[in-house]
Image (tube, rainbow, N blue to C red):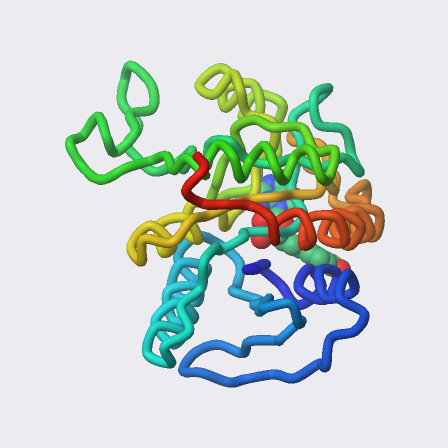
Length: 232
Ligand SMILES: O=C(O)c1cccc(C(=O)CC[C@H]2O[C@@H](n3cnc4c(=O)[nH]cnc43)[C@H](O)[C@@H]2O)c1
């Protein structure tokens, strides 16, 4: 599981009360072992550091002959209103880099329209279903942005480009790129701490979202045990 910051990682860790608290250091990362085969990583804020950290974890695991079967990007997020209210959970059926591209007179052009790379990753459908059923999360697109939305105009523009967007956060696409490079399945689950829209940091309900994340992982971890990645 890759969160951005230690507070998010520790919220997930609270869903594993029997965990030893053992920490393994590998180049560039610290892996907190939660038991049941889960390692928890504070991968950093933003898609670039998240990708670098997750890639380091995946590579270290392969070199130790214990490759991961799944990477989960998890944390708090902004929720598009009214579909994703504060305190609710969102599981991504599409992980999209929303600001990876170029501006033009005709509007935003994703890098794919410039002839490069990708802007979307699709977690396995059966995994999304399993996670959403277990946690009660809504499913939809989760956007990855490098700039937190701070105006109603920007929120509206993102929704116009991504009508299925339920949430925005800053790491999912980076985590998914690293997972894809290693041929590992990815899932993104987010607890909504604030509405996407005019910046009002004082209104972020971080404690409520972190508690929702703990509850979600308490249900998600056992559900993932039975998930079969070939049943997509
Ligand atoms: O200040 C704290 O106590 C605290 C505890 C946990 C997390 C934080 C963060 O600031 C996490 C940053 C992280 O959250 C995601 N996020 C949350 N809301 C949004 C949003 O509206 N737009 C984009 N990203 C959002 C994001 O993934 C950040 O990395 C603080």
